[in-house]
Image 1 (tube, rainbow, N blue to C red):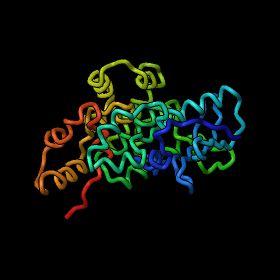
Image 2: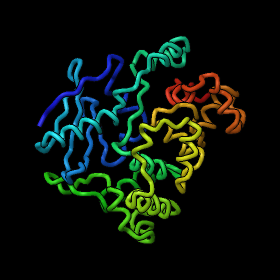
Image 3: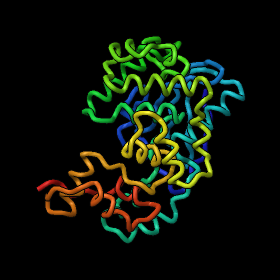
Length: 292
């Protein structure tokens, strides 16, 4: 089944797809023409793979399954969120054009950050990035998906990302050992149980009217979500007031602005504070100088 969506004028599908490492995490993948492929479970329980391709001024969506009208509406809503089709970057582009380190980003129509269809997925993915190497993050996500996700009917060796309900039924020791998740296992278990029980409604945060500080505080009530993880999730929610400071940020900011001298997280934040509500985005898409 095929249908189309209309992106904003300042939009590049390859730029969104390649905006960060999510595209490497199951069940994301990149199509040969630099489009998006993803396996999703809809509210009706239907599991399908969809692909998004840029065709002229439109986005063509191909689905492996026929969709009822409500299912197509749901899928369209998810894709709109995943590709950030509704956010206006006019103000940021106007500022970025005057900064040589961001001008190329504007030319590429970049700025949008690839998201998962649900905030639950993005919280889990973010937890898997903390205090580990990227290859281990990819492995944990792959194990989590293949063990507890629902299979794709036409290719049963492939799976959708597990639902909160699926993960809530897995005890912590099994999750820890089966996916080799270490200290993250109890965080994922508790998160899944809170979402499943209705105690925690993550989806409502997508449209929350809370200030960014209030939203940050709300995110940090989730066990395992500290300053870095909260800043990363705020970016995915379209709030760019915070820079996600990790070891890589310390390294590139040291190299770019401090002649390789050791820097503190505070110095990283001070470096981008002039960008105001766009500082996280300026950091994310900065054209970093190569190490000497």
